[in-house]
Length: 356
Image (cartoon, rainbow, N blue to C red; front, side, top):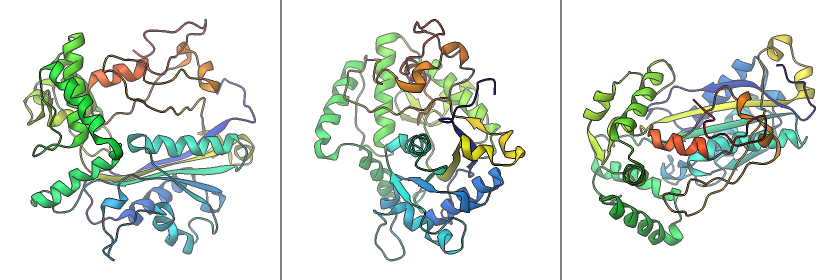
């Protein structure tokens, strides 16, 4: 690292991702254990160094347990208790559950980083575990509908009509329809399809451009042994795949599956006392930020607040790569997310081209 170390620095000293896919034989406890043991193995460190755990999950409540009841509360504590019993993680380590829909994993990581920066602990574990696939959904329409219905927990169910009206009006403007409860559809893929149709309507984005983004992601997936889909696709193959909701084909949409991932972070003080083998591969967290959302027009590109604190000081010309999370490989989604962070150049001006 060329940048000097600060006592406020936070370092990633281990990371792990399970193989994502349909795993009906693995429960939440299995997936949690795989991620915890995997991240400790990657860091080559014992679990007794962990002082805090941030556990992210969204849909555990949608999977009944052997008792017939769902595990809606204390999700992390229930998923990790056997690892406390056998000493994989320390007794009395606090487990904090976080949930923020598609941002849940980022929320767990951000919380762990903040806890280190606050000097409350020296080592924290960010852990995400999810199962979206329901065994039997491939052949039983009832199970499939139950699987799809679980996604409705990720919206404001106190006022569903507000969301439905917003997207129905948007779909009408784009010359399409918004029907998230039609057979074979999920709520979020239908909302993304409406966003894509509106982007095409307002800005001239083409379905071929969206397909190019999907083909790029499938190519990357073919190189990743932990990816759920590990085959490359051309733009033509993406366009020829089964239609889901216009303009999206199946190859443009996120798969339904199960998996887990974890990151182990520590302070500079802790890092200084670790072996050289750990220090030499540690990654400094230059900046991390979390923002909220709001209802907005579909042409509003300022959906994230201006960044402040450490991340605002990260100049565009110092960023060599940027990770953008979205549940579909739609190229327009990534364009919008590149615009949202508000990166600055070293001279302080805002760049319109932060990522090439």
